[in-house]
Length: 289
Ligand code: GLN
Image 1: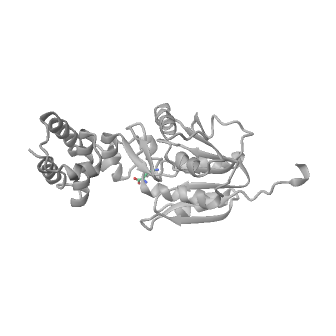
Image 2: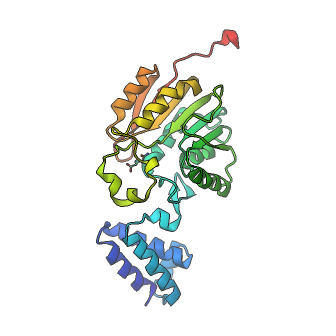
């Protein structure tokens, strides 16, 4: 059997539940993984015979995918904001929607930004790494309540040679010193309603529930973060949160209740309200400086 023939077979099997173009891409990604080659090689060698051991390896990955395992976990990586990130079942799979959160932080800071940025619930490290690599003078602190997730994030930072991040095991703010203050606090927390049917469908079935669901209305963790953020936010500092497509108004209200100002929601590439931010209104009291 040639590589091309094996790809066509896989594509047909995958097309039963994926979009046709997605099925083709996934079949190619699995084949590249088994043969340890890039896309250009795969296309140029489509008519080569597929060695039996590679064929067996390909079939076994294909079967995992057909049982629903996310492609990011099978391949062990996902690309996010141009970074190749190790991704395991201990971490949420980075999503394109979350690039909107990164863009929001970059829009409110200068490339020469110094100071401190906090990423709560860093998972693979996606948000922290994307920010740190674009704000190389800033000092990023990235926390997660899961040591297993944190290990993945640390490995990603090492692989990418990004050294302006300090990783810490912490359940939201718990392990931070009270006097530690940040210019920007950012988070993509869990925000799905615990009864949402999506949790039992598709990729989400395989992802850590603690990174996805957050109580009855999905806002339990967002409420906690907003309630405690002022202790850790510098005067004029920004809090920026990712949330569900239908949660913008509630998140904005919660931010307004603690006195944040300049509250603003932005949309993701799919046109959904995805990120809401607010600014600490306190001014620096220069008299006491
Ligand atoms: N945006 C993801 C989804 O709906 C959820 C990620 C999260 O809870 N932070 O699939």
